[in-house]
Amino acid sequence: MPSWVALSIIGLTCWGTGNFVRKQAIAHISPWAVVVFQSVTVMVLAIGAIAIRGELNVTTEALLLAIAGGSFQFLANISMAFALTRGPASLVVPVSSMYPVMTLVLAFFILGETISATQALGLLLSVAALYAFSR
Amino acid sequence: MVANETARRGAIPAWLPFAMLTLVGWGFWGLVQKPMTDRIDVWSVALLQFSTTLAWGLGMALVRRQSLDPRQKGLKYAAGAGLGSYFGSLAFLLAVDRGTASVVVPLTAMYPLVTILLGVMVLKERLTASHKAGVVLALAAIFFLSR
Image (cartoon, rainbow over all chains, first blue to last red; front, side):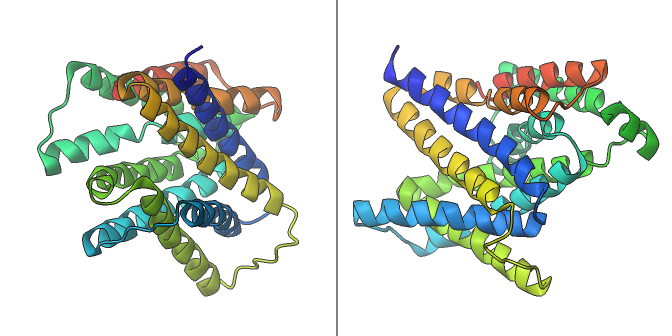
């Protein structure tokens, strides 16, 4: 098996399990606390990685973008935590994973990027999925 | 159980608006990733972004007077979610580095399958026929959107 396939499987298993574990966390503590403790864990690992590499690159533009990205990341994390308090992980996670729809539409209108036929099919399927979930 | 809750609350399940808000948050997040990684390395991006997320989390907890006692029972699960998030991203970046993004991205986008399997098998979550159709459609959508 090529190494990238093994790594991809490890990646999707970590993400999928991480979301499942988050549902367990919500059963015990508030969504607000979950997001803080989850972020602290990631921060410890991220700081460790920077310490090992021995370099941190920061530019004003990148910092402003990171603040925007981190803010949207917080919005996504806290919304996900609240969604998990109200619904099953097996439904909440597939719906929230369709976020490329938003990125595609925003990239189309803001960045002027084009949408391929395959991506358009994905958009249609996501609308059908949302309809099925709301029934 | 899920179907009954949906019927009780009306046509829109209570979790759906929050899941949609998550989708909006990740959508905007996705938009700024490319310009950011064009300017600095991914390790620095991760640190700076998570610093912001943590700052928001701590700020909101402070405003809400939320208890952040590390002895809380759910702490290990929240930390586990953080580990999954970080190592998932790390494996993804290494996979993209060794393979092609056009294959790695759709493959890793299938991660909801793992959550669905664990939810159904471990938490005994039950899905209606419509929900099952939705899961299949969502996975197909994720696959095509990632191409």
